[in-house]
Image 1: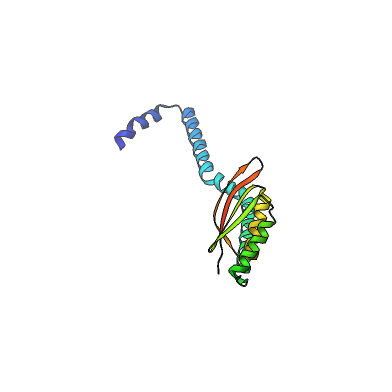
Image 2: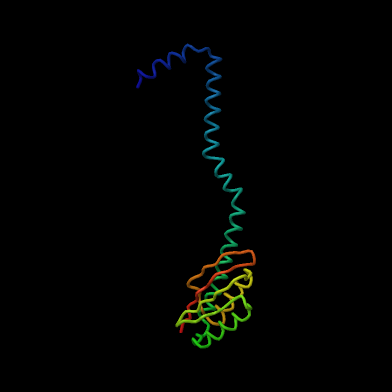
Length: 158
């Protein structure tokens, strides 16, 4: 190791004191830059971003708590008989108008629709989940020029 450093030490000794001082200052500046970029700037960035992250996390927590409350309400609701569920599904489907048709086969009901808005579909899903206590198990739809078209299969639980 000393043999490898010997030429460097000789070169250093050959430099004028003013050049040695310049190289020492440059080396110190590089060391300071390295320390700043590795140990100081990342924590400062984290501190600057912390309030926005906390707000976003608080909003996510509030949303999850709302979902948990909704889930507790749904679990606490009394079960609906299959006949009541079919009647509620039929009523919700009739509210969609002529662009939707419901077919029931056993414990599954299929809504086939065309030209419906996203708001109507969301309202139908919410209404059927709350009144008929069904859950969607399959959905296939595409957006067309007049709205959404496709089908949704829901499971009617006894």
